[in-house]
Length: 419
Picture 1 (tube, one colour):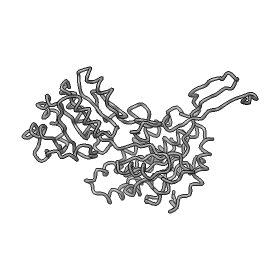
Picture 2 (cartoon, one colour; picture 1 turned 60 degrees about the vertical axis):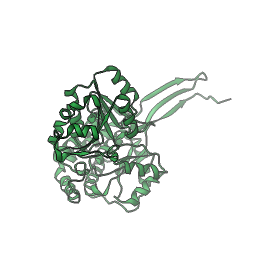
Picture 3 (cartoon, one colour; picture 1 turned 180 degrees about the vertical axis):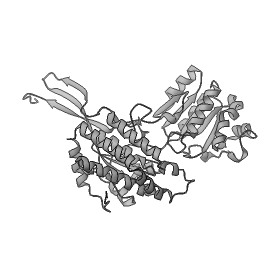
Picture 4 (tube, helix red, strand yellow; picture 1 turned 90 degrees about the horizontal axis):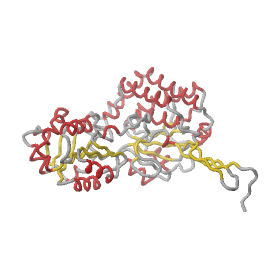
C-alpha cells in the first residue's frame, strides 16, 4: 500500500468523488467501514510503529502527547467505533417535511450530504479514522489536514483507508489526506469551489486562525474552557467524584475540567473535594481564599496561587484553577466571562439553583450533578462524533451523522406555471 501526497492540492478528483458519493448505497458504505475497521486492527503493529516515530519527536510532557499516542487498545476502540457507525441508520434521504400547496405542487424536504468536508486538526491521529467514517456514512467526501506532529501516523492510516476503498471498488478520493504543511492549509481554506465546509479541531489558536483566514464556511469545534460550580447546596460525595472524574479521566480532551468554582460557604469542604486530585498529581492554581483553605492539606508542591491568566485557560494537562464566589450570580458571571461555550457543570441539591444554572449558562452542553466527561458523541448515543460545535449556526454540541447533512427541496408538479 502506498499513498502519494502531492505538494499542490488537486481538488478536481475530490469534486468528482463527491458526485460519486451520491450514488453509493448504504450497504456499500457499511461494507467499506467494516473493511477499514478490520484492516485497522490487522495493521496495528504498522500503525504503532509509525505512531512511535511521531511520539519520538514530541516531549512526553507536552499536553498533546497523550492525544497523539496510539495503543493497541485505542486502535481496537477506534475500529469498534467504525463498526458502530456502520450499524447506525443512514441520515440520508430522510423526509424532513412534506406539504401540498393549494396549486397542487408537492414539496418534499429531504436530507442530503453536505458534500466535501475539510477538517483541520492537530496531534490526534484517531480523528483521521473518526472523520472518514462519519463523513462517508453521511455521504460526504473528507479532506483531512492533520498537523505535522502526527504526520507519520496519519499517512499510515490514510494508506489503510485508501487501500480498502480500492479493494471494495469505490472512488479512493472519498478520503483525502493533505500534506502536513502551511501551504496545504492555505489552499484548503481558500478552496471555495471545491470544499463546502471546514471544521477545525484543536486549540483555540487553531480555531481562531481558521475562522479569520477561511473563505470556505467554518463550523467551530474543539476548544473547551470548562467549569464546574460547587454550590452551597452541593453534595460533598457527588462533588468529589464529579470533580475527580471531570479533571483526571483524560486530561488532554476538550471536555476536561479547567476551573472549579466554589461557593465561599463551602470552602471548609475544599480539602475533601480535592483530596483525590493529589493522587493524580494535579497542580492547583488557587485564588486567595481557596489557597488559604488548602494550605497544609493539599501537597505544597502541587499548590500555587492563581494569577489572572490561569482563569480562561484550557490546560489540557494535570492542572486546574479554583475560583471562590459569594453566590450563584458570581459563579454565572465568572463562567460568562471565561467560558468557551463548550461544557459547563453545576453540583447542587437546591432545585432553584439547578434550574437557574441550566437556564442561564450559554454553552453547548450544560450539566447538573454529573461530569463534563460525557460531552462525547458516543455517550450521547450518536456513535462517534466529528467534533463538539461551540457555535449556534447549523450544529451545536456533539456533531454526529445528522449534523453532517443538509437538505434540499424536491418539488413535484403536473404542468403548473406561476402567474
